[in-house]
Image (cartoon, rainbow, N blue to C red; front, side, top):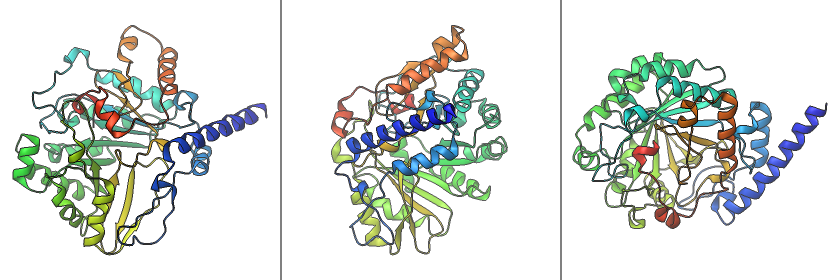
Length: 392
């Protein structure tokens, strides 16, 4: 009985803190309004993040250990693991033009180290892992890593984000080894623009991988599209057309600043503008009720098999519902994509510390997580690693 009472007060305190964080983060945002029914013109209202809903989910999905709960009551049940800093493309928003100095291979986490650390997180309440890079499919032991992770007791979802260049030939085995969700990065439907942006050829191979994923039953196949003014903002509606007859979820992502990608606010196409373009072209756009920890604003279109989403990291952030943590390829642990703060898990792991000490390091880092990241202009000035180091 005492234990139950204690857990109730811990939950109540976390919910109060969460509400406070939410107030600090979302005041004045359109996210504080609700929506049911269809979008009318460019007048868009957003679902609010609900502490009450989070609390209900927490009760149903527990246990989540204190290690994964920050000082604002946010429960972190989603871990993104970068498997490598290497990539077979050189995307301009991901890698500096002069390239990036990569971590020596011996300083990257081994497969066994990845699985051990992942097990610490999963046993503490993480139920979703996403594998990123660099490009995760170029790691030679990717299939074995997927198999080991997919067998962790408590893991519900093993996802992967990939550029799709060599995915089609690897995907059958990856699916067999447990990869259940798939995001493929594609920023243009024009081969010449693809080569300009990625500094490599390969557009046809990416399209082939998308079709292969659909044939293998991935539903939806998620396409990540970073929208940049003057480059691909004229293709927004062409991407939406992909959802008409195929189970594709196109995810339009606001251009974000990272070291070396020459971010400029003039390149940023805000969510409101992207949505306005879609509304003017397509009828029957309807907002989907999102989970409180969802990063995307999701929409259905009448008559379309797939869906459309917008990730609004710059103009309407979703920090209040953040449940994500990141493990970088070099073993550094990062609690916020835009925060420069990192702590090494590789070093204590190789120094022989036990799981209890590792959990203490992780928990302390989670507790230091801020209520929200800085505004977009402050982010642009804040030192941060290139995306190739952090992982997509």
